[in-house]
Image: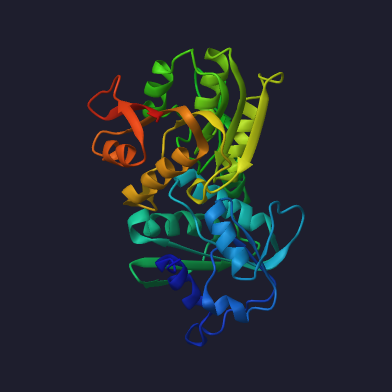
Length: 338
């Protein structure tokens, strides 16, 4: 996995040219491995995204799922793309600090690094900054002048919130945060009630499609949700709590690595971005996983952006497919495994 340019910029903070910022006992939020980190004697990482969490552990670093009450003299933070996720992350990092501890963070310029540095400075006062690799790293040491009221506001952004007009909750940083994704809704509106047996929801997010399957399809025996974002999966558990009598499986899992087989149906709204770049190969991997997971005669129900060339991939994988509906942005593809 190539090193994140924001991480490369962040690591410059700890170079001798930057007066050797201390690196004793560190918490890494949004942890990603870097060769220089192998020299650090005491670092633990929190990473909600399964592929990155696996990469962190393969590199030999300790990973934690929950921060608990542990405190650190240093918290480093690589934010995702969401504004609320970034601001909430500042508060989480602040809560993990011992008095006098330091927060170090970095973002790409295209993700609003300069804007977030200004927000960070509102809460911390004096901030030191480095710019390189089209990214910006900035850091501050905890002191009495920190604006705890602002940190309180940011801390609240990490609390799961209800989507207006719906029974669903989401949390900062997950896909379709704060709204029902229009592509998923298009698929949900057209799912047939005849779906039956064992169903897999690949890239299940916070559980919207699974909820639709459970409400609409009385002959479904079990739904297994496979989702790479642990935060979204936690929301899915809450969102599907109204189905206590149904057989459900929640799996923190990288779908591109495959899933167990034997499913009668698969539903999915496959991702097609890696970071900020479009990655058609990611969607193709989801299709290959679905093909391997379905029994012969199994049914695939997916939604995709209109420009994505999934039909030819499905033909190669042995599916007969059709498009029952669509609009100017999305297309539905229903397919049967021959």
